[in-house]
Amino acid sequence: MTTEILERDFEAFFEVPFAVYGPDTPYVSPMKSDLRRFLSAQANPLFDADDDLSFFVARRSGKPLGRIVVHHHRASNALYGTNRASFGFFDCADDAEAAACLLEAASAWASRKGFDELVGNFNLTAMQQCGVQTGGFEHAAYTDMIVNPPHIPAQLRASGFEAFFPMRTFELDLANANVPSHGSPEAVQGSFASVRRRDFRQRMEEARQVLNDGFAENPMFVPLTPEEFDFQAGEMMAIIDPRLSSLLKIDGEPVGVVICIPDLTGFMRAGRSRLGLLTPWHYLRHRFNRKRAVIIFYSVNRDRHGQGIMGRMLRRTLHALRDGGYEKLGITWIADENAASLRQMEKLGATPLHHLHLFRKALS
Image 1 (cartoon, rainbow, N blue to C red):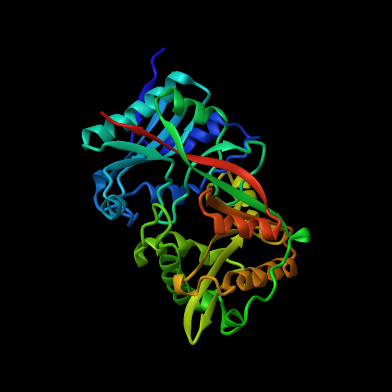
Image 2: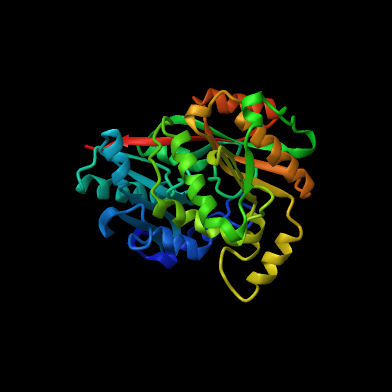
């Protein structure tokens, strides 16, 4: 039986993980409406043109077996002088032929457009979900974390991809967390501004500015435009817990930010990541029983590093989480080369949750 490759069939693309991973997988799909936005070059400001991305589905005898996105992040290539295409959402059954066909389709798309390299996973948002899971497969994920079964990295290696840029996600048991001290006198100055619905847009723009400044020297980071940031962050307004996220301002200027939201994986799993008649009921059930939260990102302006600001911000966040009845906190990926952030995790008492790598392949 021949493996068939479909291009730009969104309905088939969305159904793949439900068909190939089963109900007990740690994988939780993004909401269908969000995924549709991510894959639209007209809607997603990460892309400049319709031919900046495509997506493929592998099928055999009418049964979906896998999927992949291939795309071009022009701003990243321009900033770093690279000539690479990226892949994302590589999900596949434990089927060597299907995986090879998908990876070949993505490679062929990138080669036709003249790219030298194919790298992923990058999952199609301005604040990229990043990596391929290579360890910690037994652990459930939090919102904004990538998970996949162990055969995915094996399939990539079999198709000539190599792993690089190791990363880890973390989990913190809030009952046993080591809460940071108040910090140095410099950090004590200033005031916190909560992220509430009534001033959400202003706070998110301030958060973007701090993120861009604090992450400016991080590997592969590309400064976010207001449109890119709002494309993803705007959806947080409906689900944000205003106690958890905050900005620290000194002399009226934002210098530090923590964006922390309730974990939504249980809600999304209950509704199979679709909007429907039961969505409000699933959401209310989630809201009144939420015990897990996730830090999407935290950042401090570069000229304020070393002043204890992040310790003070995390202290506030941990107290807010405990007071709100949360029990577990997830922290999205931190690169193994980011020694300062890894030390922060160690000090808090966080434990590694998943291991991830990027995978790359040179194109002839």
